Length: 397
Image (cartoon, rainbow, N blue to C red; front, side, top):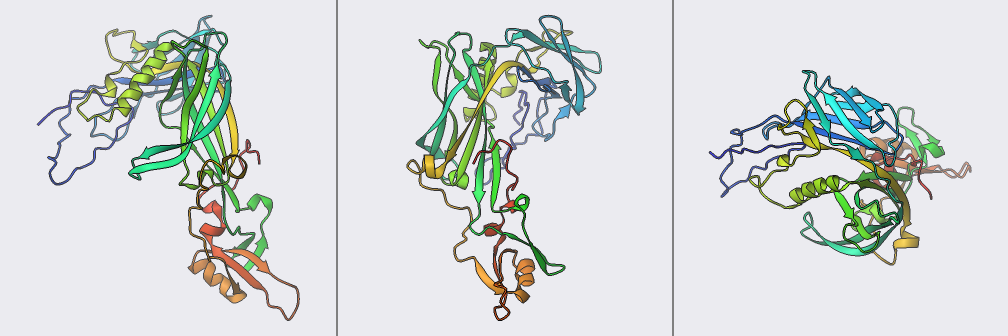
């Protein structure tokens, strides 16, 4: 039986059991070394900063072991100390403070058994503004669809005339509207067989859903003739789901990091994207900028990042900005011929037995004209079943 003599950290991708001609792999026999993993940062945003501490774990374990009861603090170059308090198991938060451009910061922590650790000293670099967010049509291979899929590739440009900012890490968050074909404007109460008009706060015709980045996105100006970074691809949005159907917003955060941090993230990114096997060089063998004071040769994993941050949000409307670039995405459900009219004595049946929503109540007020009720499946009439009907504070129509 073959043994793995490598560390497995942060996240474990479940091993898939392969059938037929593939020989089963017994992963119970694993040589495992327990090592501390650190994940923390300080930025120039005035907020509570976070440090997470836990141990590595073997491949046959599916949960992390947090490091509890540690004493955690950050110290700047002037000797100011920022203490952190354990808010959850293995998660430590500071009181709100903003890092200062040009100032240096160092993370320290002592475990409950008295062992001391510290990071390298890292200087905070101010991030220049993001100049613009823009998009172009692109076709990228899809592992899920087994073919290329069309969509929009979103890019950013930035520049720094001071020449100080050279290395960057990026994150994005996006939000988009969902609009149902037959918005329900009445609430139905099956217990009492009554209904009422929805107020604006209860509207279920327009909803919002969000997503955020989960991969490492990097950019650098190293070796470039100008202090400018152009066409950094931050996010691809397929035209096949309804993301771009109506109105779309993307927020990009730019972290100005130092060269050591950039090289650390680059190596992680290369390891993740290499498509290698379990027996390739593992991510766990990559040390960061943390070290043990008591045992200088001991391996400590993870990274303490110090970064200036800038952000930019942009909005895009399909009808105004995108209709000449992509085919309009379809609504995610088939709602053709799904709106129908029924009588009052059938409303409760369709509502409870067929998951229908009450769309409108047609009452002319004339005694010889019966009241009728328009109904439709909830998926076509009430978007709050699968998204939030609360408009985000940042949203601009």
